[in-house]
Amino acid sequence: MFEHCLYFNTTSLARQLEREWTVAFKPFGLTPSQAFMIRVILDKEQITGSDLALELNISKATCSRTLDGLFELGFVKKVHTGKDARSYELHPTPKAKSLKAQINQASGDVTKRIKKVIGTDSFETTVLSLRNIGSSIK
Image 1 (cartoon, rainbow, N blue to C red):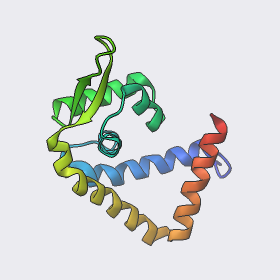
Image 2 (cartoon, rainbow, N blue to C red):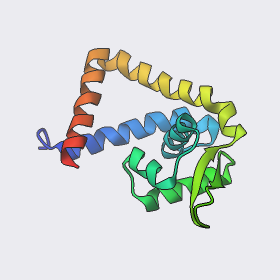
Image 3 (cartoon, rainbow, N blue to C red):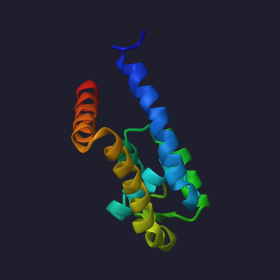
Image 4 (cartoon, one colour):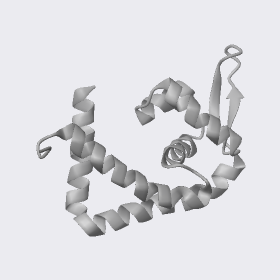
């Protein structure tokens, strides 16, 4: 019925992948959304909330809600830039920095498992195709 439906098939795949990464990030007390967000913040070292939302292709409201959880967990802090009272950057805390390698490893392990199941070429072609489709639709 949905053999040719991009929406159905990508959403179905997203749910399956959500389960995989949920298991991977559970030991850190993070959801997949939080873990991928903290990975960006760790990689950039400092980033504005707007730029983070753009990087993750999510709304500012979704970004703020996810950040709230990371603030509560002590993984991210706000550093005011001095431009005005509302202007700030997001910085990883020492707690986040201490888990960087482990979080990246957990994500990498899931990627390795999926590549083993579907093949590296299929994996890389699929990711590239999805990124191209996403860029084209914007």
